[in-house]
Each structure stands twice: as C-alpha cells, then as structure tokens.
Image 1 (cartoon, one colour):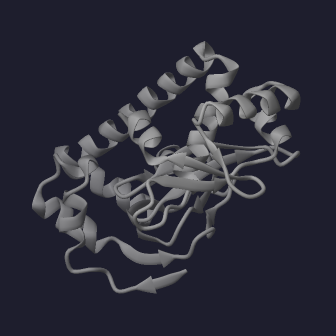
Image 2: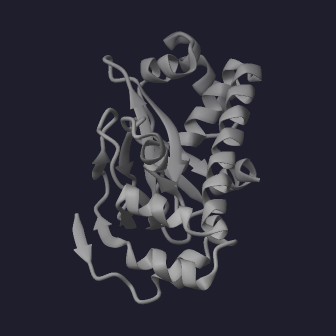
Image 3: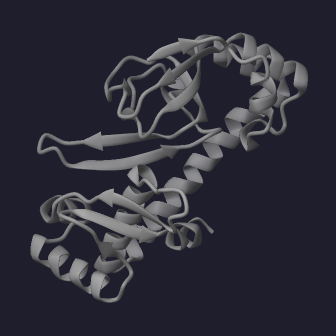
Length: 234
C-alpha cells in the first residue's frame, strides 16, 4: 500500500459517480476532507472476512473483489467494485464483522474513510443520506437477481455465468485485443462452485469450446470475447 496526497479534484471525481449524483458540491467537498488516499498493488488483501468493522472504502480507479471461501479453499465472488464502488459500508452500519475478504484485482486507487466519520457525514444532510439508500437498494436488487437467475439457470448456463464472473473480475486484455484472458479454476473447483460433478464440468467446457463461446489458450488459460461481457452487462 502506498499513501499518496489526496487529489485536489477528489470531490469532483466523486461527483461523477452515480452513487453521489444527488449530493451537493459542498457536501462532497466535506466528504473529500475526510478521505485518506491510498494506492494498492494487484492482489493486495484489504480486509479479511471476520475482521472487526472498520473503514469504508471508495474505489477511485481499478477494481476490488469481495470473496467468501470455505475450509477446502472453494471461493465465490460476492461483489465486484469498480470505480465508484463502495465496500465496508455494511459492517460500518451494524458494527459487526466484515462479511467477506476484499482483494484488489489490479492496481487500485481508493479513498479510505473512518467508518464513524463516514456515517456522521451521511447523517448531516438529506443528499448524503440518499447515498445509503441508493447503495443498499442496489445491493438488495443485485442479490435477488443473482439468487433468482441461478435458481432458474441450467448447469451449462451456471458454468458460463461463473466463468464470465471470473473473466470480469480477473481477466486481462491487451491493447487492440477484442478478448479477455484469465486462468480458470480446476474442473473440480468449478464443479464445487456450481453444485455439480467434475465430469459434468469437463463435458460442458468441451461443448463451450466447440461452439466457440470460449477459446482455450495454453494450460488453463481461457479467452473470452469482450462482446460477451458487454452483452452480459446490458
């Protein structure tokens, strides 16, 4: 982690994020004074699941994933935060432990707020209170959509959706390349994630390759067209 000087235009940058669109300039300027500005390298662990409630983080650039793991090392991504994304908020609100482990996916710049100071800011104006309502509503809607879609998806679609999650979270692209590459988990790890067998995953991966939905590079490296991620986001 490298602490850097808080940018003079931090309030303006935050104002460009949808989360803060209802917050006035003076309120954003006040919030900017509460921020510590940090730059983190790729794969930096920001907090662990079970850590005490602490800071609230706002992603300025880069990406962060929040994951859950079990004793066997099975991992599931429960949240992805790009620019304008915020995490640590739930624990700050209820004072309970962190819900997941937060890890940077790439070099990431963040504004870090003391949890109590951030909540104090939200209590001082209606515009700031809308930040809480907007963020919590988004999370409930996202969770409901994910639960519903996974309950109704076929095993093949659950596998593809999981691979696209990984591509979105960990994929890298080169300038001029119209695809994203990432290293897939093992067949058994994928089977554990989607609730099926290793044999079924092997068969479905072969089908996706044959249909040119995915491309295999060397070893476990997978190539996904950027168009697939764009359509998925829409």
